[in-house]
Length: 507
Image (cartoon, rainbow, N blue to C red; front, side, top):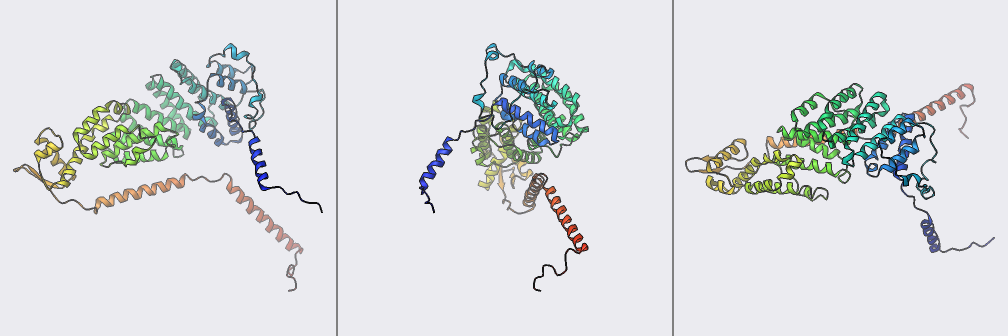
């Protein structure tokens, strides 16, 4: 028997470490290779009738459009279309021609061997890819034209041509990409300062999408129309659009988040703060992660803070310490402090200091409404501190103009149920009554709203659950095999191949 060579355990560990170090790290694919892989996925989605591959491509659109440039788009078109293709010439006409140095440069493909290991081997195409690939490339070109002010008008022209081509093809497999196209069209008009001119086109496309039951396009167009109306402060028309349309239940979470945000803005302007608060909560819950879409996350929370103040609540302090929201909500934090203390002078000073930011955020008109809330908060604090206080002292503490204003405001607060008390006109003071306890119909209403919210959250979570694809087919196959085995067993019993005593042993 031969001897076994003994090897130390430390030597094996060192060998494994050396192997790990010697393995080359795979470099991420270049933008051109990523576009080519995405077009392959789109082609697979069309051939297999599986839209999930198209949605996978569109999920990477936000990160990809930040990495593209003229050269990347030219190379992507060259690699996916044959040399004499009319579609290729049409796409390249929207891009600037390649510089002479780039045309004469030889491309070294050996350096990209690691990056292309996971991709199929490149070969010159002999025919045009599916039409959806052309629309996808047009979408990338439109987004690239948004990066420069000089190409805004060119992006509007390309958007018009893309919409005409998309509508003339009339392919249902193009619907997910069409929803992204409409977003790019709206962005082109908005950057060009002609957003109102796109409204008739959006309305016509929304009617067509509704008749075709195209949920992706319909959800995108409803949000485009609402954004256009709110951009020009047309809240009545936006409310009519919401009442006349039905938002698709199968829309994606980002579209739902935008829709609830627009609804929250409309309801807040209409003084329906409870509905606005509910819609903004849904928008926050359905929105992408804070670091993925920081702009939308900040816009929703700015409006959410103001609505909570208008409802008489004070937002949680931890909200203003969020790393994404801390800087954006600094002005709103000053407003919250002024409302919480009930100081009218501090509130007016803060409002004048940050008026430009509030105008840009389109929350100035809502913040002006908080003046009454500041006064009510101050009166409530005084009623808790004093059992009897003169109207003159109220006027001085709340920085009101006159005692007549103080008497009117206190009377309205008593009538609205903000405080309990009465005004003694002969002696010129306010007598505060006993405060309400924490029980009664108001508490039951609050609990009812909380329970309803939890039930709605549970129902929507159940609807959003995902199950493995074709899981039922495995169960059907197992049941079919069981039925075949039963048939074979019954056939053998009938033919007499199995005896009654078979398998009983000594018994």
